[in-house]
Length: 155
Image (cartoon, rainbow, N blue to C red; front, side, top):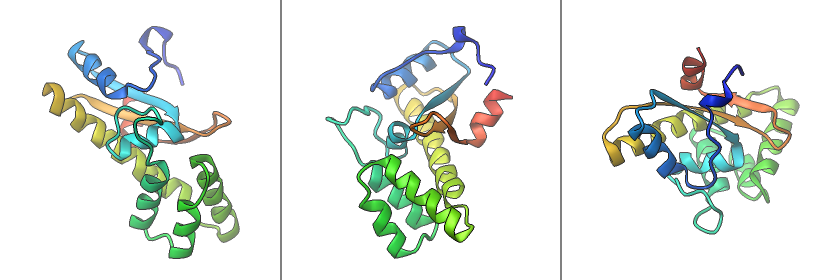
């Protein structure tokens, strides 16, 4: 993606404090690049992402699907998946069978929510306005989606 190693920070489960520290260090923008099953928690306002603290991945995904009008039968399928990866696969299969674009629509809204929630988190904790973008990948490390803010940050 053309990002210098000197501009990267690998983080673990404490994304909220990392966002605040980066902002206090006068970082101009932040690009969150990660596995969709981890980053999706940010869309639900969960900024400590360890599974022992909070989960909610399927609930957050299902809520975004419902908001976009996914039929009830399919919502139940997504909600009852064992993992976020299984839910992504279900949406991909639905797209392939019906010729629709649920993956792009749903994950596009999720990344938009992640960006907004992250920016709000930063402002709430240190009153800084920092542009946050997000890029989500699947278990095979294939990019699912980049947010509009991510495209802006990447230039």
